[in-house]
Image (cartoon, rainbow, N blue to C red; front, side, top):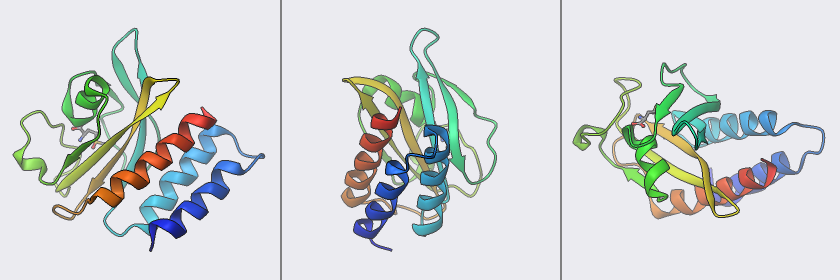
Length: 151
Ligand code: SME
């Protein structure tokens, strides 16, 4: 697995004129979960700015009860408010955290901006402790830019 190679595969998914945005996002989730050994759950949440809630869209991995998350709640909800990447090397060290599975040790959330507005985010859970580097952040920002273009 290299991020360079993954970008090439993701670019093909984004460019497919026959697929809907929803299908492309599902394929991106599957690609990332299958190819990055420490990505165990990959999903997209999208913001409803009136209700101040995040809503689960495409995802790959175990089903989650957390399909709607209020702004400010959990790692995802905090990113809806902060507009900044949130890298959590150890979820146990976080007070404001929503546990989806007892196997999860770390999490990364990167916001998606369209025309300067935070419209959602990619959320990744890992069963490996402290697995994320700057490279993950840069790669996931690139993925989020791609998603913004197809939304
Ligand atoms: N852990 C997240 C909730 C979403 S699940 O990881 C799918 C959070 O604290 O916001």
